[in-house]
Image 1 (cartoon, helix red, strand yellow):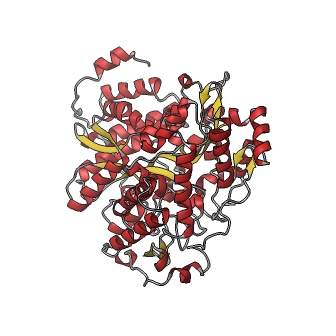
Image 2 (cartoon, helix red, strand yellow; image 1 turned 180 degrees about the vertical axis):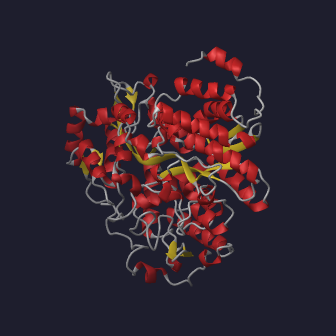
Image 3 (cartoon, one colour; image 1 turned 45 degrees about the horizontal axis):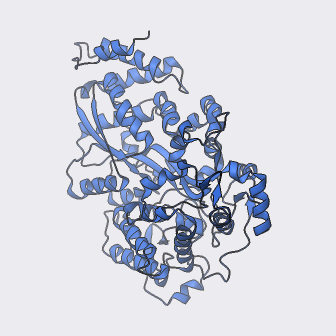
Length: 573
């Protein structure tokens, strides 16, 4: 059965009441068939199994038919698809109207924080980064996914939570699942594979630097390559080219640039997955579940030599090797710049941009449809040690609050499950390229498209994906503490303070806030160490680490094929 779109549009106008038998209507059944044939033709489930999932959702939604629910998420391709297409399909199948609002990630955090603080139900659900897991665990304001899973009347029997690759990111140390991933993307190294493969450029690079132009393994090689393209090559194929891309405007997104594991790539914290123990990538020292320090004077690492090195390299590269306008850009504006074709590499590139950079109109595809660019493992800073996390991974996840009325929460939970169901998830992955399910990653559809995605599929099929982790449980109040990042980093970028002064001010500001924090889970509330002189902590084993005599060791590179092999065998080496 396959209705034409014009016919279906006519059928979908107006709400149809539930029939006397309490079954879904013929209109809903027609909707299921229509969308199975016209939207969800790619799935890891059979057509019959998809039909069963949609029919179950339609039946489970009968008590909520005619309701309107409100959810909010950040603006990325995946959420555009959900808000502009999947909300309509969900209404056609279930009769529940969804207002899916898109806004900036900083605004999502403000909204969920406001609802937690005042108890008013602003939204029925949030797609909120798992970076807030430490906050959710301590505040006890979240209605856990683990509790929702117990209610069989509203939980899809085929949800299969073990299939979610980011479940460890949304599970607290108590074993409770607080959030459910809706989309995931990592920050990886990005580069122009076609330029790096040119014999003339390879020969010239080796003549200047003494080693091969290839995927950088460390920050030293990244810096050399940035200098090579920005200073020595300058013009390529008739255009001005640059060896580095970043952004530096005073904006909340500047904070993400750092809190999203810039310091972990530099090596500021301790080994340990997911976030370093006892000191994590934010420089937070832990004692059990209790934060006890951020500054070096108390045993933290946020203003230690490795963190200062990270900020110093960031500013130096931004000024010397990025396009002049980069310093005035924010995250959104800078994201499209590599697509203009004049950037050689980017040390910190979100895979959420994969779909956008695969657009044929950009001219970044070869004749066979493969990309001229590739993504590879992130290069490591001078302080990095084996066993540390390798970078950041965003896990935008469904979050429900206890302040939301049960009927609204249940209806929103059905919408959430529709968006992450196996019937929908593969198509959503192919649209937004932010995979959440192992079954989708290993599907034939992903195998087919892998050569055109520059390494994305290889990354997510490798064990390395668990070494790129979100902000973890150590950060006790993400909304409060994250505000310190962008203003202090901006002060250093603008030359108002030195990198050391910026990081010290940030560390002391965070500790001042932490001293005021007291959560319902009181045993995990911050309790700061007494201050000691800096050298006391710098002389101890682990983070904070003393300043290295040489922060720029010999540059090291390896081939793209070797970089993929490192993913396949990755265990934090």
